[in-house]
Length: 637
Image 1 (cartoon, rainbow, N blue to C red):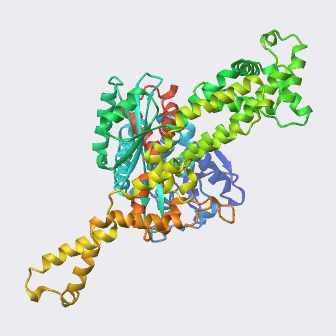
Image 2 (tube, helix red, strand yellow):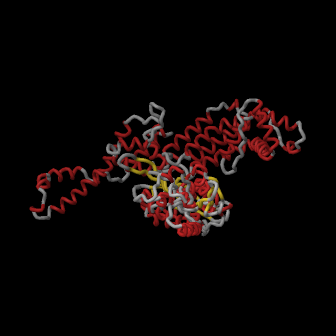
Image 3 (cartoon, rainbow, N blue to C red):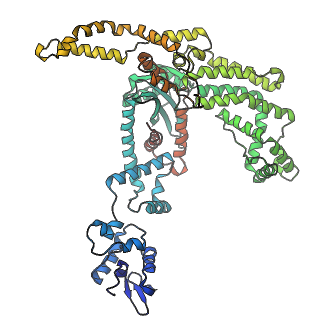
């Protein structure tokens, strides 16, 4: 090879006649007019990507390295001619060595960061562990970072997930230590493998220097093989609370209205609130029975269009011809009343195109259309009036299911608005079936929620919400009772703790020799004793009452500011926590209460996707770890 050929790529080719070279790896002959290295670099990159391009002094050594490179299988890399020619042979330092440039290994810290993100992707996006063995996924990772060593499926399952699980457990334990009061939501679920689980989520108000906010953590989605008796559930809950060291912090437990769950909470001695969304679902399901005939007809129409591709295409064609939005019909879910509402609302929205499409299909030879009962004008009116009445119920269900917002203080308001909404309809204008539904809804609402003001969890949360105060109540008596109970709450402010601790220290130092006492302590001795007599825990009730009087005199917090941004009551309290230190501590015990057990239901929605057909062989322990990570890795303080 000519001495003028200084590019390292020439070390992998032998010269031949007529400006041709021969690849030392595969023997392919190539033309190199004007001694251009572009075609040689491209050949090595595509045909031999595993070969390290380095300058060798001996042809024998070169061949040995080429053979070794296929055995060691170093990572692929793409390299440009400019990058190659910029590296001069014999240059000193790591920056001048092409092997260091191409094959610089990842640091341990970087490897762990990518491993962590990989597990986060698997757990939060419901991917199977086997994704790390997928060829296309390997290529993608290889192209993104050729120096990252993708773990095996076994490593993911037996090492990375358990390690990240334990790490996350420690983080959650650290977060829970900040809580002074915790509200739990509890619910049960059975997987497609008939494995039974109970999930427990913790909700609490976090007080930090710069902000106060509502935080949530999943304590566990634990396997439950015992009988679902109240006693067994209570024992399981006690075990979970002891493991997380929060037994003394529980202010309330939210669950559905199942008898065994309510019994378990009574056995444990905890305060209970029945899931508002669950009760509201029962209310609406009871009302929908009055229009069941219309509901069943609409369900048949939806199922027909979902089943028949011909009918679906006709509907889309009709929507296009009428220049209407191409909206699909929605199926309902038996356990969710609002899915029935959404189904009916969508049908009403596409009614014009739907009726036209059904007429066209009926004139054809589709046999299945004969099983569809078309709605009369009166029945369409019943459907429209039903949707109008249920609209507010749907709004309330959506609002009350929020997980990161204060919700218990809004329940009385939601009940008032629902009753006002139903009473706003003129019964003379309603179809008989719809009128009966409205009456049934009012009766069920009254039976289930009329006494909610007697629940101290809900009433006190309402008083302490600066958006409501007395305006959140229906009766003045309930409002006065809630204030009285708050004022009788036994609490100790940080100010009192400060004086108590300082008094103890002073009494201790008073027994020491005068030479060990601070001159300032002696100077302020009489004053400190005088202040101590006026700030003792026995004055707590009076202080709370004074704080309450001052708090109630403040103007209400507007739901939105002048810019239309929804205001957070916890931000309001954070700005005044030093003005109302006792009320602030009580507020944290009430504002953490959730209105529903929806957070647990969301856990099981995720768990259902995790225990899919591809992952139905996961053990219950592994399912618990994956669900735990899926929820808690989303938490951001």
